[in-house]
Every structure is written in C-alpha cells, then in structure tokens.
Image (tube, rainbow, N blue to C red):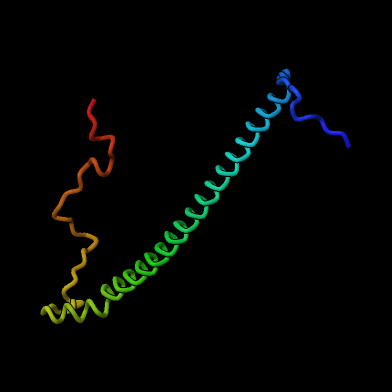
Length: 129
C-alpha cells in the first residue's frame, strides 16, 4: 500500500458555489418554517376551541340554574297570588267578602250620570275642517 508523503504540497481548491443547491436549501427552510407555523396556528386554534367549549359548558350550566330559579320564583309568585291565600290575607287585614246586595246594576231605561262623548261614538266628528 502506497501512501502519499506527508510533505506533499496541497493547495486549497476553490470550488464554484452551486446556486441551485443554495436555492433548494432556502426553499426547504422556507417550507419548513411555513409548515411549523401552520402547526403552531392549528394548535392555537385547537386550544381556543377547547377553551370556548369549557366556557360554553359553564354558561349552559349557569343557564340551567337560572331557569330552575326562575321556575321556583314563578311558583312562589303563583302561590302568593292564589285566590285562597289572598282571601285569608284580606280577612286578616279586616276586609269582608262582597255581598250580592252590594253589587249595583244599571237598569235599561235609566240614563248614565256621565254623558258619552261624541268623539267616542264617531271619531271623525271631533275633527272640524
């Protein structure tokens, strides 16, 4: 086996730069950055969707609680304004139930003490041109 002597004078070799290889590397770098940016954007969208889902679920449970509270309040209101309860409360205040003799009716031939305004009978009669 023959070896090159160590005292061989080797000069530096200057090669021409391959422009196509450099442009391919730049394109590859740019494509990798776009791909990585796409993954970051997709991950951000995914986590935002999860966050909105949690918020939506919280709002849905709060809405259910508010609807149940509204239903309870309506039930209490109906119970408070029930005729039987109002009658007992009126008696406690000293009010008496109305009697049939206290109700007055108007006879067919009698005139009302309040005259009927002509504008109520014929609305166009009130406009004078």
